[in-house]
Image (cartoon, rainbow, N blue to C red; front, top):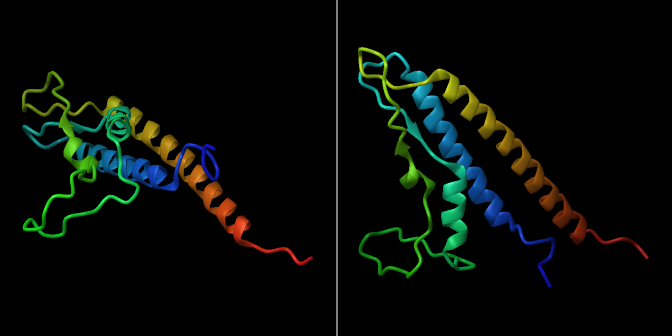
Amino acid sequence: MIGIFDKTKVNDLNFALDTLSVKNNGISRNIANQDTPKYKAVKLVFSEVMEEYYSNERNPMPLKRTNPMHMPTGIEELDPRTLVRFQNNPSIRNDGNDVNMDYEMSQQADAELRYKLLSQIAGKKVTGLVNLTKTTPQ
């Protein structure tokens, strides 16, 4: 049996949406700093983060350490913010800024499409759960 709906769980969709939010924050930061001298553009590769997420055996209920003095739980929750990297684009500008607006706009469009798709899938899963709990009079 695959599961109540299929292989994709609501928690997985939640993580993917959070990852896209982090990606969009990086894109927005790059666009906002397009005229800042010596600014280095950042990126988050969605497929790499999701590959990392699925490569680790995940606890069904991962524990979060709220204090550094707490004992480690074995499997730490993956935070996509830790996977944001510099783009290392070759800069042709004299001020050292390496933001490529064409690339940023294409990445923003890609992230927006993925976010909309995953939001729709998550919404359908929630609707399915709500419909499952409804009882029909007999």
